[in-house]
Length: 105
Image (cartoon, rainbow, N blue to C red; front, side, top):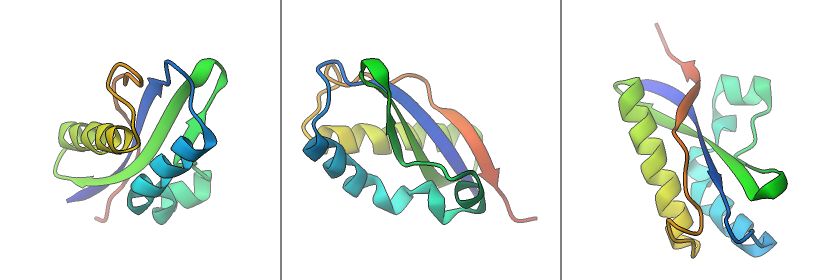
C-alpha cells in the first residue's frame, strides 16, 4: 500500500457557510494530509475555498494504485459533502489528481 495525497477540486454552486465548511472539515479530519511528510512540509490545507466558491480538498488516502487512490478520494469527499448537506448539484466535483506520494521503499 502507498499513501497518496489527493486533491479533489469542486465548486459550491450556492456558496458555503462557515458552519457547513467546519462540518465538512470535521468529517474529513482523519484524512488530513498534514499527517504525511508532504503535508507537513508543504503546509497543505485540508479544505481551501477560493473566489467564486471554488474549492480544493486535499486528503491522504492509502491505496494500491494511483487510480484507486483517486477513486477513494472522490468517494470520501462526496460522502463528506453529502453528510454536510450538499447534493452533487450543490457542489459538483472536478477530476481528482495526485498531489504527492508518501511511499516507503
